[in-house]
Amino acid sequence: MAAADYFSKSLLLRTTLICATLTFILLFEVPTTLACAALPYGQERILYFDLTGFSIAAQMAYTTSASAQSKVPMMSKTQMEAQNVINNYIRDRIHSEIRRRAAADGLSLAAQNEITNQIGLLSSYHPIQCSTVFLNINTTQGVDYVAGPGYNCFVDNGTVSGVCKGGGCTPNQAPVPTEFINYRGILEISNVVIAGWSKYKWQQILNQVTQLLASGELGKDFTSSTITVL
Image (cartoon, rainbow, N blue to C red):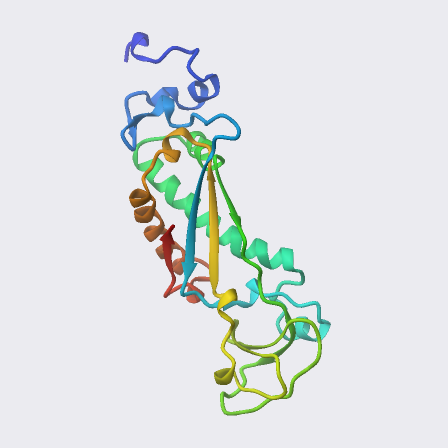
């Protein structure tokens, strides 16, 4: 390919260094020399979405109780740790889908990394705190309330299946409060190309992300999840 076919090196130096070797391969209808271009600081696109229909893997809950930690070692020990588990799990699947599409259009690994670095995820989600844990309790068996911050959590096969915050209850009587099984995500997008995608296009992408959520290491807790772009 003739050198004249390439864009001027003055066009976004970082973009050229990473992407220019694939000038005429298109990334979602845009030349790849623009694929890594970033919006000016403060002009990022903000996209909201809701993730629903998931259950709480033990790693997505947290406890400060040594007794609870001994029963469920995989449970997070701090709120931040639990937040990181769910945030990273979702973010990594979003990035994986973007990478897949970029790779299909011939973009290099370096370009894929640059693009995904331009897509940040924030969330207002607050994970559930378990003051104590009951393992695999029969649904007809009552249990006593244990005082402490958070909830008494029923954990069945690695999933928080129910809670109790009163004197004596069963998992069937106390489902997990909806605030813990609804996730509001906020995408902060600085990539020029991706920031211009329509809500419809993002909905298509996030529909694919739900499949990735269901196939990952926490997949059994996301088999019925759905994502809605707001």
